[in-house]
Image (cartoon, rainbow, N blue to C red; front, top):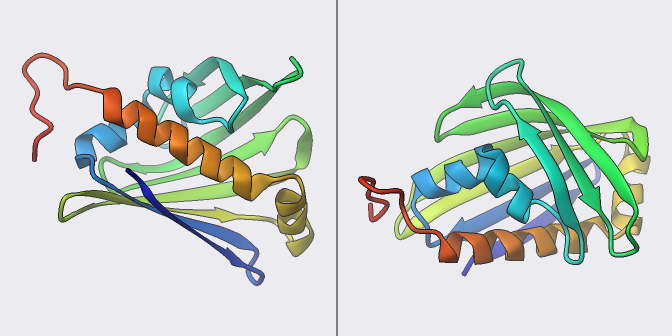
Length: 166
């Protein structure tokens, strides 16, 4: 089970999410970089991702189409600025609903005893944007996505010829 902690920083405006999980780094990296897996987990409770496209390399783009519980669809998109395999991803994220409030996500991956730790720092443009994220249920949405990530990782098995036991 993922141990989740969420820390809100007012200045600079950030949300820092730390996830400690009993899964190997290779497996955790895969679900953060492969569009099939991202589509399966990177959404809040009640939402579904109907389409995903990702090119996780510096300068590569990504886009995801989500459907909310009421059936409304909207997209999120961004660019990968840095990708260091099994260590770090820096990417932008823009929602078509709030196109003037993009964020930057920095994900730092590390192997820890018994699994993997991922620290995600989401940088907001202004404190107002951070407060808006909170007011719209952003923290609960992060919890929901983490629970979906945990469920996906728990059911995954390695491809033929690969060993995820280390």
